[in-house]
Length: 92
Image 1 (cartoon, rainbow, N blue to C red):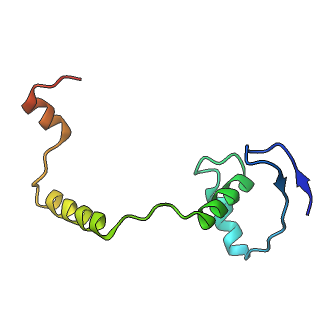
Image 2 (tube, helix red, strand yellow):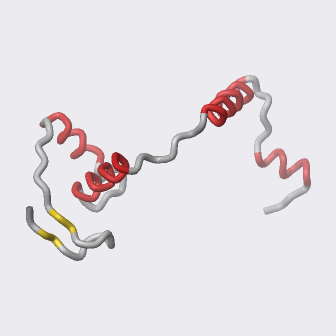
């Protein structure tokens, strides 16, 4: 393990070697730049952070509300933000 100091504000950086299947590496190569990462290492560090500290999960109640909202939209029971502004006489 070697040390690479000064990157990313998380303190001292350590280098690790990881073996991954060629197919996974090909997928990483396809997406890291598309998603706005400066390099492949930054992409992998971010993935590792998500694995250690997973993003917040929505509650079952929130998921139910989202499902109901989708159904309302499909039934055309929703109103656009612009329509609401027009009804209330609000200008940007």
